[in-house]
Length: 142
Image (cartoon, rainbow, N blue to C red):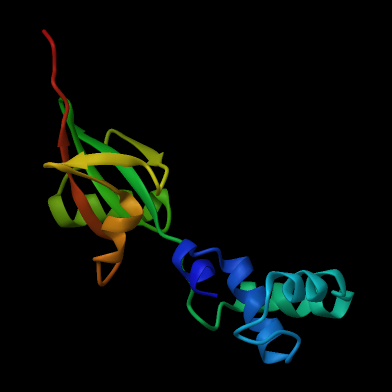
């Protein structure tokens, strides 16, 4: 369950939630027990899990990271649920119309000072979203 929450995979989270609630697995179940539960899924189970994903009672939000060009070689890196949310965040927070928007992998490795990190690790430190991950200035050659 911890890995599912960490990876923010809504369908997996709700599948595990459903099986736990139905008593078909326990918190300490092995992978074999989970696989057995998955193999015995009936159409009614699939409908119930789909309904949970759609209704999202646990308020699971998959956070992504976007790079938005805001000037000559300058980019804002934003954590958001989707591209439109990232663009809106930059417009309202900084009064800048982004020129483009590109989604980065959440596990993209980068160096910060003398250590390496990923956007996923950075997002864990945030309390709310959308949120600024940082700015990046690309060297512009003339």
